[in-house]
Image (cartoon, rainbow, N blue to C red; front, side, top):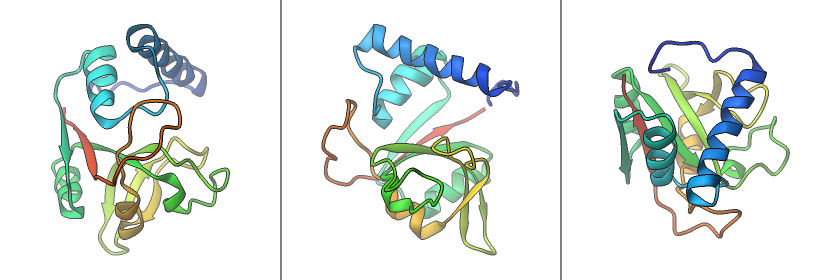
Length: 157
């Protein structure tokens, strides 16, 4: 995204995901359910060597809209079960991340690229539904969810 390069086909995207996971496993001993802080440090700054990124906590819906309006990419950790996405294997992932790429003010919906389903490209979530689902989590495989705290990763060009 920050280089304006196309990812390529699904196979190329899968290879990149596996490579990033292998990097995490080799360097940090884990690659599942990566917290927002570890996503910033390990994946964006570490694996991709991209530094123009910021992690914000205790955010509001307006904070998200502001970043999108400024042309930034926003990644949020969510309890996917609260999203009620009909395309997830039910009940949905408890620990998940979605990329917010836009906002539809007429319908009050966030527009996302949701990697949790094949139908996730430009998927619309009602703003309150998505916001209620934002919940940062700990790095590790299926660890209990900590007390709820909102977070967003802002990636700037």
